[in-house]
Image 1 (spheres, one colour):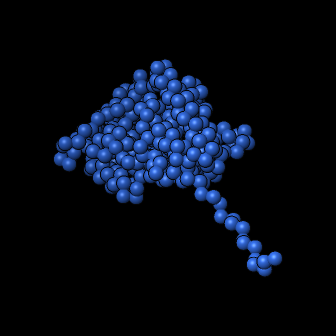
Image 2 (image 1 turned 45 degrees about the horizontal axis):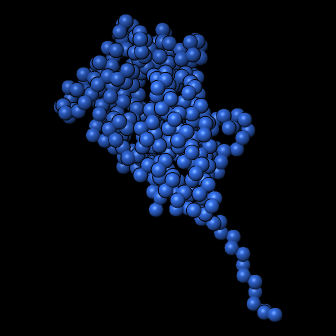
Image 3 (image 1 turned 180 degrees about the vertical axis):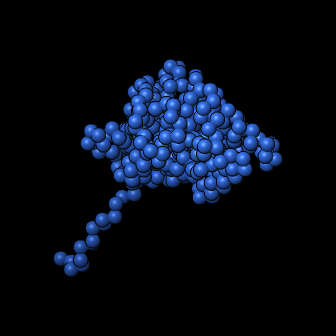
Length: 330
């Protein structure tokens, strides 16, 4: 009988190559520090231009940039949102004029266009923002007043009294149909999103970027914020029902995509005011998006089967077919 000691059991978890590919993909979809710095610098330049003859109380980056759901690499239609809060006493004409919201947007557009640095840059009004199109991204400027300074501002839920002081929210242009000012509260949504993201170790923002990239790679007709809201609602629904969220991106993505056809065929509401975020989505676009989601679900199911059979390479190739060439299957 040998006196050699028994080998120590190997307690190291077995490497999951498929999940490693997902985590690499999630990391690569996040914008770099340098790209973030570029966006911040561009915001500063634009605010300085507008500050020359407009009274601006504050400016803040809002939207996907601040929630970590903006996807890389940046492209011309990658948009970062900047809200500029105007002094209501100095610019009360835009609050009181019948076409005040549109006049305000046009004034911002003219000020930027007249700066020599933007003589070759496309600057245009797009619904409730002014878009400044750079070669690699777009800055969208949303003018705002403090909600309490706009007595006739529409309430997002059609009610009154939610905002009690100037710090509660803002009024931004609403140029859909009639001209008006519309209440918004980007800080509240960011707080809710960040709390849910933190509770899931960053996987809410990670899955959001993954699904946005899927939509981009496959020309799925779902807008960026619409996709983000559907992902956020998926996590919120799981929490409300007391159901666990899968531990891996592979299973989480597969489970979310299984729900996607139903989500795109029904109205999607954002969590703060329960406003629908997909009003402009046509029936044909809903059918197309649902069909593409079903196709992706079948491939994700096949990838899971291949992985369980030990066919890791084939599983990763199937996933690359779903997520596009940016998903590294090597």
